[in-house]
View (cartoon, rainbow, N blue to C red):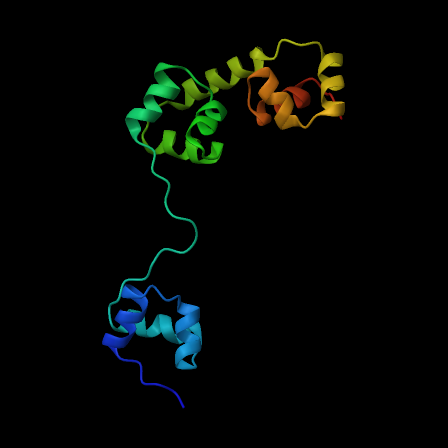
Length: 153
């Protein structure tokens, strides 16, 4: 027998007890879309899906990336986040212009001071990520270098 879905019950289970939409559907013997319908009908705000939002303070990012001139991959490692998150935050905080970004990428490619043969030898036994760490650049920089120099692995 289906239980009646009321605002009070739904708000308590979803908001206070933090039950998932799936769990609520099971409890009321309805689908998740029905639960979403009632949440909307009762003006109960839904929680964000997925991973929690990662906060990086603008000052911290500015200090590491702009003032200390750390690479995006170095900043990401230091903060324990992905490079993608660092890139999004740089863009969100307007910390660097597109032109400056291009200059940094050029500089990163120039950081790779190694003979092509040595790089190929390194990549035979190691991943691109490991080689990038050894050279102090990001994995994508290694990939771009290989592509620009027509080196296939």
